[in-house]
Amino acid sequence: MSLTDLPPYPMTRAAGCPFDPPPELPVWQSQSRLVRVQLWNGTLAWVVTRYDDQRALLIDPRISADATHPSFPHSLPSTKVIKQAGRVIVGLDNPEHDMLRRMLVKDFTIKRVESKRKHVQQLVDGMIDAMLSGDKPVDLVGALALPLPSLVICDLLGVPPEEQDYFQEQSDVLLSAGVTEERAGEAMRDLKSYLAGLAATRTKQPTDDLISRLVGHMQAGELTHDDVVTTGVFLLVAGHETTANMIALGTLALLRNPDQLARLRETEDPALVANTVEELLRYLHTPHSGRTRVAIADIELGEHTIRAGDAVIMAGNVGDRDPGPFPGNPNELDIDRPSARHHTAFGFGVHQCLGQPLARMELQVVYSTLYRRIPTLKLAVPFEDLRFKIDRFVYGVHELPVAW
Image 1 (tube, rainbow, N blue to C red):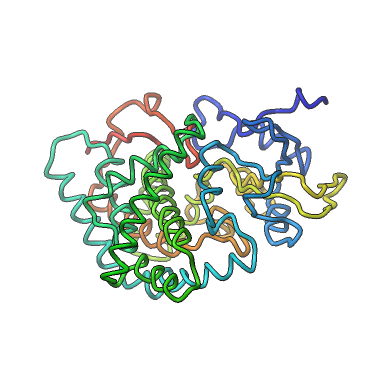
Image 2: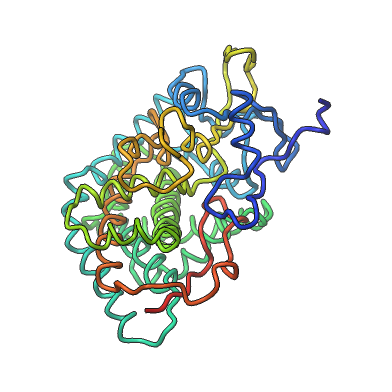
């Protein structure tokens, strides 16, 4: 196969199968551990198709997350802008990665996250109250899925809640597949300017928030001003986008699987709610463009050799449908699946998502509350009319009109 014949990546999902990976991926998975592809900018990359290989490579020291490496595969123009905007934690290798992670991790410990559960429950109940008292149909994305994680991450960082609309607009630009590098760069500069202003305010008047703590590290000489600003932008964007899409897309998946929804709605078992969250994360895998890395030494993988300098993409959306680690039918939603928590939706290894305890808690609150309080929740439009985010780094639905 010549280079011009290489398949493009990422590919389009099959019509009528919005929850499944593109149909080429499971075929590739059954045939080969690695497939050579071409990205939007002509970059060549290896797509790793199988779960065990993905996890092994994500902890292999010969695989780098350094987004400044000249061969690093940027899955979209916007992700290139995000990862090259400064020292972004997901684009760093150790020891820099560990240094920055240690400064952030205390805000995302399970104990600290659990202390916020009551507040998140109050937010969810308030948003559902507003839905029930208003007109129908309601767009669940605008009424609950997007504002909830936005308010939570704003509170964590110290961003005034009235500013959430602004950063949502900029983040929408940054995560769009169709945006140019120039436009994404504009959005990044605007967000960095806003965070720089917030950091300046916290330098004079620190409060109990993450930006104030980052400013403290800057004053101690451990971080630069740009580190504070860039980290703040990344957490704002990453802290709401994946959770927002999981709330809406997870709700849609449950509506399409009414037997599963009924069990979740009727349960009082927090363990089943927690496992439902894990299974939906596995089944939907909203970061659907894959995790990007670059090899810094030769790696033998079966009959293939990944050479130093080769771009590598872990296709987690098909990895989490691998029948080996997920027996039964991995293409079906099963909220009782014992192996659900083994998914890689939050990554694996040192770069595993820092905010996963917060995302899990928010999803548990929503999934245990929404369908119980609105037991007759249903789609208000034909399923075929829904617009899916095929043009985004994080997969989901643009709107989800519901009624009851």
